[in-house]
Image (cartoon, rainbow, N blue to C red; front, side, top):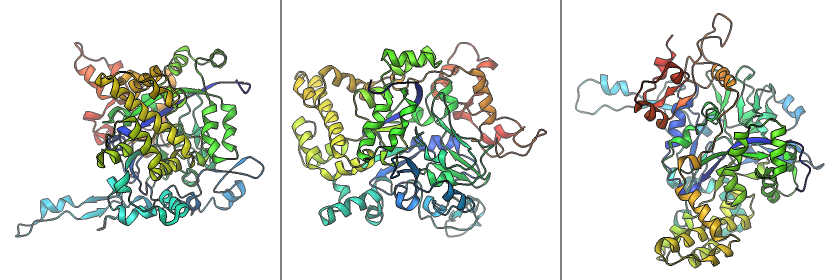
Length: 549
């Protein structure tokens, strides 16, 4: 290895295959139901699905010139927060104006359903006017988490997409906004659980921490004082402020499920089965690579952080650090390592923010295929696909701005691998034979192409989710008592108990999967109390009922 390894750590990560996302928002809805279905979090979406091109959520969150999120490289070769160092933080600790306002998210609303029931008999049908959940007054709906879904209103809002604006500035009038004729794709987003989280560095109270055992970034609700500096510091704007509790909240990566070997709620309920979960081994001492000079080198720098789980030196250091054998085995079977490092088709979101994100994406080939099909060409032929990838420079450049800090060569290489796989497997399916030249053209072997196809197209449940269970079982039970992310009346929001604040009745946060629930219902014997401990079934969950003493 190029550098001397001193220690090895494990990190839970996710890869999403964007070709499979149909924009149904099921992941967002189930996440909302599980984590933010309570007072104070009406506008909060730990998971949201954005249409690209589009403004995102909150609006234009990618405009770091305005929002000042992430890290920047200093003249001395180090890193500092874009929002300023310690002195700047001290000056702005009581007022942090550089963050989205409610209008950038949306004013949450409900409808006056009571009017439908209580309106007197008349000739006109009663209406349910929208009511603000903040003020209770009549409101006008002007924005939401998926307002520009499927290019809705693109002619009014598309030009203000930060990436579109950047491309326009670079190409002047050569680039026309005709994306609805060339490409569109959906981008699901959660917290990136970064290796170098700027939100954690921004917090004056030290309330945000990164778990050593799996890298999940969480907010300690007891230590959070509502400074909101973390919202400014996060470039992905995936930390939210609970206006009811006065605390910051964020995606937890469904840690209670991860600890028992279950996938996240968004993964479990995904219609397109586009998410992959697993662990990777990495060198924590090399995270300083986030300070490399050229932004386009950040992708390779982060790739170098990820270690080969089959390397004897890596295995020996992992064992020396106390890593369990089943975790090492899980890292060796990890689908995200295969997609990121082995096949090299997954890319990080906005590496130029220098946070080292750990939620990666396989860029979509479908816009290119759709464009060919619309023009009457054979959209599955390798020659057509390769030619279209080279010809459709606007989509490729747009994807490069999202995933590689503008390096189109990396994106082109990934799309060509996906195109080669598609054309190669068509030959296998139709019986025309295997074409080894297709694999060689993208620097792969036929066997590797078939392995990649299996993982991306037909992988089973246990192949997509390789999640080792936590070994500190008692620690899991303790964390069940400490999680604040639940409904009104739950931890962090309920009245003080006999032993002070947050000493009331604990609420379980481990959510039972549909698969587990079905297996229990079909079992020959009734489940014991031990089996049902700390489990909440989403299918019959009544949060208000659960909150009763």
